[in-house]
Image (cartoon, rainbow, N blue to C red; front, side, top):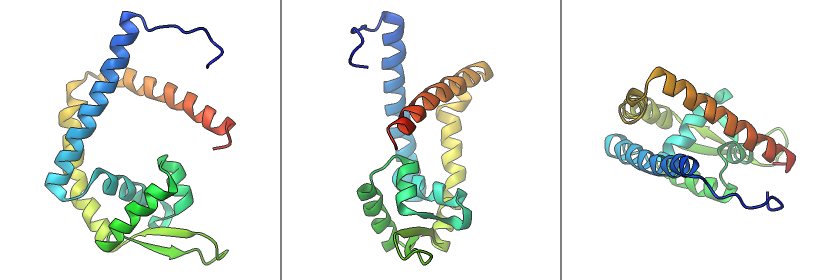
Length: 160
């Protein structure tokens, strides 16, 4: 909050913050490289399709999917356009209200994510999960839920 006096990070806080940032950058990069090398999918492809796989009817209104993924509608639309050319997803007009568009996971997209998921989860396990103790994983889960809860409450208060 800008009205609060600036509090610099102490060495413990700085180590945690810088470590988290570096870990996230390196982990995301490694997982993205392995995903692309093994499946031909980008991390953006995988993210869109993994959300669609879990959605009812494997379809989601583009505006709602963009909000859920914390992406701009423009970014999601460009990504969907690239995925449509490869037969992974398809856009359909919303028939109930004649407004908006849904994105639907196509059979090829379902096949592609089903083929990619085992290798991706193995990489997540190799590069993170198996490196941590059960207690570290519990603490990381607690930390994640605390920060997500805080940020979600801010998003709701701002009308997002």
